[in-house]
Amino acid sequence: MSRDIKKHFRAFRIHQDSEGIRAGIERLCLDDLTAGEVVIQAHYSGVNYKDALAATGKGKILRRSPLVGGVDVAGIVVSSEDESFKEGDAVLVSGCGLSEVYDGGFSEYVRVPSDCVVEIPRGLSLYESMVMGTPALTAALALHRMEANGQHPDNGAIIVTGASGGVGNLVVDLFSKRGYQVVALTSKNDASIAAHLQALGAMQVITSDELTLGSRPLEKACWAGAVDMLGGEVLAYLTRTVNEMGNIASIGLAGGAQLQTTVMPFILRGVNILGVSSTNCPCQLRRDLWGLLANDWKPQHLSEIAQAVISLDELPDVFERMLDNKTHGRVIVSQRGI
View 1 (cartoon, rainbow, N blue to C red):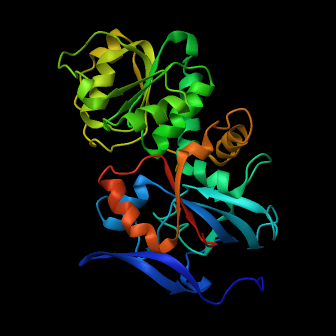
View 2 (tube, helix red, strand yellow):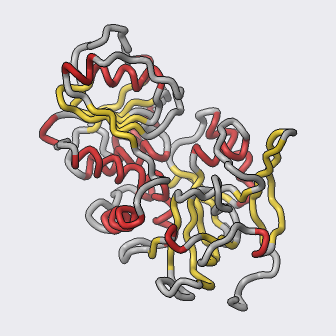
């Protein structure tokens, strides 16, 4: 074991039992962490909606307890039992069951299975990789799946729902960079949010109260495709309003997990719903997508997307604000001090 690993270190740990959820900073040692071949000294993590659900118990995320929270982490390898990685390598982990079945990234040290680890490609810093994190990987996976299924900028405008969130920001940036006309949908009727989304590349910004959902099995086709963070009624609306052979990348459920629709959009217009799960993304595809995100697909506005850098101690406040829809862009945790 590397002599650089502290005997005890700080981590944001979540306990889930019959009494409910308890979470906070604890002092752990390496033996307290779930098993893995690679130990990483964490430098940065990103705060995701899924992290807020896990830490507050408002979503059933943890599959075992206790677990350190945080689905993302970037840092430096301090020891590895896998020859693919060596001490000093800059690496990241996004998804792969962190904060579900493995201890996650909200810790000064992280131990993970080696097949979860991605060496940070040339062109990305540790910090940039966590401004991107799981949201960028998710956005890239959505783009990959949609284009593999025939989506093209020439087909017309793409609507992005939940656009003011961390994933939404990165989807807007990535798709606009690829040449798509992006219409950003947000629940926040705020001129500064609209200006922010336009600066990221949105051709148009609309608010939720401007949207007429309708109820017919098919409504007027408005969109060549969609990337949806909301689920529920909005996803049902998208199935009714996406054009022939268009694709909907389904990413999130901030608006609800239920989907009530008919088969009409699928058998009459050939609309496709493509599920996007970065957690289950195959290892090689994950590495390929990170290679693209470091180069041709690298978001152009990372400094605008990063909204705050916080310490581990500030996580509970951020979780509450995130669940109350009072955050936008990406919040980054620094384990190395602010």
